[in-house]
Image (cartoon, rainbow, N blue to C red; front, side, top):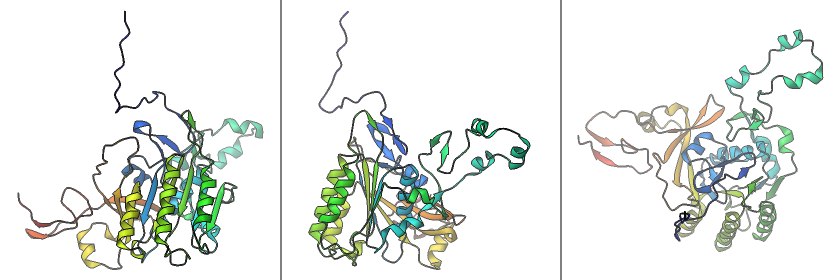
Length: 363
């Protein structure tokens, strides 16, 4: 009996059915896409799994508030918890000092219940070499459950990260304040990214690059817009071919409108953060849970890797909240009821998009 022929076309890729073996902190998604976590579980869900390997993420800062630092801290801390190498570039004089502000993974109630009772341990007269057979499923200091690290942790913003994670040898901190041009930073990025070649068989580790306030006025190259654009283009092309993710934060108001559009176009994933003005009474009447909000997160673009199907989100604007003043969470905006038959709102009744529509409700 003749074997059936497999029909192939120029629009299909011959992907292996077996999932590649992945290192810690990596997750396999659809169409062979491999994700690493943003450090915020809610943001990972919105983006369909996290940041795809080989993608460039851009975050537009709020010029009046450092809310972008919340995203950077969680992104960097998640990588260090998973043992992923990190390159951090900042306009600060001492960028390594920022590592001391990274949050530590939180311990959930279920994990606390698994901890052994010290009174029971005193009652057990067992030699120390046999203790390793007890409590194998407990959560260890680095966020391991059942011997495996969690893909995405919740971080306690009031608790600093363990020192042994910050003092690791796989962390490279760069101060870009005194750089007259970007050639030095480009060489440092190229050297760092060369550690993560892309192989079809397995992905043992992935690298993370975090560049804070890239067009800051403190930098000597801040007026060299074309050179900055060339650096971003080169970084994106390098990241695309390697097992790594780069995130860049910038202030749009410091760029000309045309260059700001170019920056946004080159981003695979584009986010923006905005702070809430103190005691905004009108906004407090429109939004429920306003007293717990610290800002807004807008998702302008989601990376499309190995697919041409656009990502359609149920919501693009989310409120940033600090749960118990410790944990960073994202929630869809809930609009409070508006009295009267006509009025303005921050979004349609069925979505949470950033665009606003006005008009009468017609039933």
